[in-house]
Image (cartoon, rainbow, N blue to C red; front, top):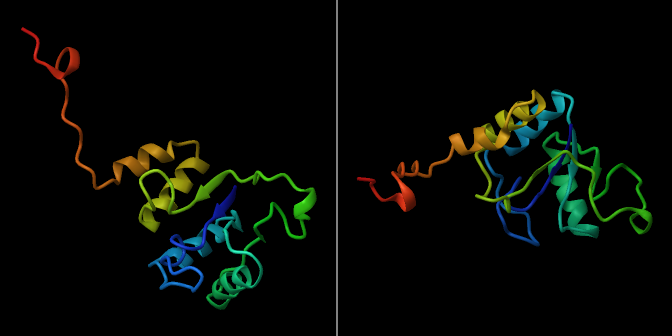
Length: 142
C-alpha cells in the first residue's frame, strides 16, 4: 500500500517552521510499516529548506521515504497531478485528530487485510458510547 504521511502534528508536535518534539512511536511505527512492505510518502506543507529539514530529521532516525511531496521520486511538479495517488493518508487533521500510533498501525493492517479501519479506530476512541434511543426521536414509545 502507498501511505502518505504528514510531518507537523503527525510525526512531530506542531512547531512550524521549527521542528517540534517527536510524537511517541511515530518513527518506530512508520519504520515497521516499511518493513511490512508499505511505501511511505512524506506529504507536507513544507517546501524547500523546511522540507529538507523534515526529511533529514526522519533520516537521522532511520526513516527514509519513497518520495516527498510527490507520487514518486523525481516527479516534476509542473507536469504532475495535484492529487496524490496514495491508498491511505495519516494526518493530524483527520476527522477526530491523530489516533495513537498503535491504533494507526492496527488500522493499516486491517485495511490491508480487507477489514474496516474506521471501525477499528472508532472502537479505540475515548469518546463515550452513545445512549441507545428508543422510539422516534429518542422518546420512549408507549
